[in-house]
Length: 253
Image (cartoon, rainbow, N blue to C red):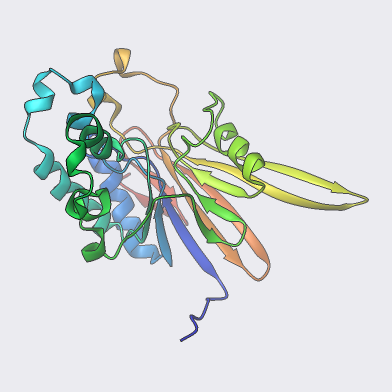
């Protein structure tokens, strides 16, 4: 059976959440907005989970023995389901389970239930997990952002990947929000690719590795629209209290 592609398609791109280090009010407001807007697809750029207990920095600390992994997983499943998430791409934080097994118990790597997507039970949530960059529209790829070098300038991490792959890229990882176009052409005819970084929805006060809870990050999310007449990129900033405005409606204000 041939799948019918809608003439007009809208994508909500959710940024790095790093649950349970997420911003609860911002995420709650995003869920309300997603339910109201009824997007065709909800993409996640990765690092939806923090998995701090699996980090190399947790080795030998209280965090390694915290026994909170199942609780964090259940919270993550609930949030991802409530957002209506359809697609998630692999990322460095969610690779942590594999890295833990690789360094400590490599004989367990072959167990299917320990693969990240099975561990999170994404199939029951209706979520597709992509182990590689995912082409969600022709010439448009969803990636995490750690596939290349990270720039301190918003949008450039995504743009560098876009130039490398000769396709538009929307990603996360940098926790910055920005969109940059790159055009090439001759004699008035040109083509355009985009590099887009979705932002983040973390509560920076929970990130103990940040001095003074400060970083040059940008809270926000992204909406992409595609149709017969082209595409539209919308970067929506989120305030420190988790509030924002989208499509003439205020959430959390």
